[in-house]
Image (cartoon, rainbow, N blue to C red; front, side):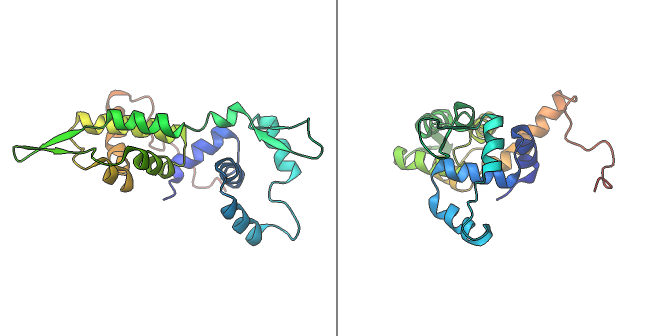
Length: 194
């Protein structure tokens, strides 16, 4: 689901439009079928959706670089772009290690991490689209959920349902109480900006 409250500040920080980010994101993740569908629907006939102008902008921002060793306009992703993403193995292991292994239910103990770890890591990575910022927020959400006794489902259900999205507002609300300097409440009326 699209969360514009998170997306807009993210795009502003990157200095990219939603379309520009999406194209680079799909290209980086190797989602060729989706790129072809997008091109068929929105690109002009025989035009490339990654235009030279867009590539030049992304180069100036440091997200891609031109491969000067090849003839033509070949690009590669730079470390600046790659740093927006997490490693599937490390991110999955970090959440797995944080997640409670067992829970007490009616006097008994029930396991919460009894699933194939490799398949689960892949599911988690696909769910977060590999984005480092989202993984970092999920780690904070999960730690908050554990600390406050909110996590009572198996780890696979936690990821499939994106249960952290229910914990996050509570965590952020808790942070507001202690840190009044960063309030998400709009303080002036911007209704007439456009």
